Image (cartoon, rainbow, N blue to C red):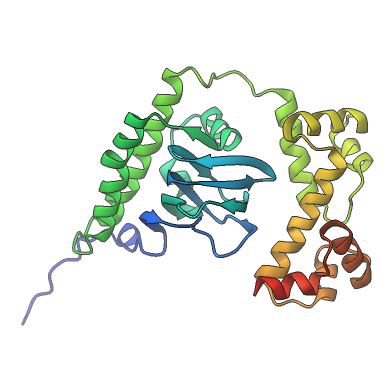
Length: 285
């Protein structure tokens, strides 16, 4: 009788193909369409050229030696990029976040979500590639390694620990409570995404227990646009996401996003974009 050898592989970690991906040279942002609601974690370094991007409606000039760190739920858009734009990136599944970021202070995670983009000195950029990107790519491509998934997860954890150390050394973050205005801004964004049927400043000011005027001041300081403009921009971005990512009829989208009717949705969309939803959908195909 032939004896079966014991299965010593780390099954839950070894099947990493659907949970992690890395590219050392990519000539575009690694998302299927724009705008796009991220459903994974992503670290992206600009190698050359530039791109004009938005993350949660806040604009960023993404250039050589910049690194962006994006979390699930954030909306990424790009309006312009140069012909020589090139990035390296890795991404990992949402369900791995807790395992990879465990034991890191919540203030640091909040800092990453707030800051989004960082400028790397040339030496740090080179070290990042030597110590993390190159090794991650090598381990990911080594299909014979039975511990491949476990190694990748540990390397990702080490990457964030190293980043935390750099942030602490530069005194960019403290364990102090986050500023009240920043908390109000984030809660405002969350409420607008939640209450797609309401596009009035007074409604959100009431939810935040502040005056409409103060909400407009906070919005202007953080994004450069008024609260009403932000509400409309988030609503239009959500409509674009629905039009691009689904084949739902306009009347179905109107119901899903709590618009009074299809005609109202079309009128609202055209007012803010200059084109009809159907035209936008056809352009995106």
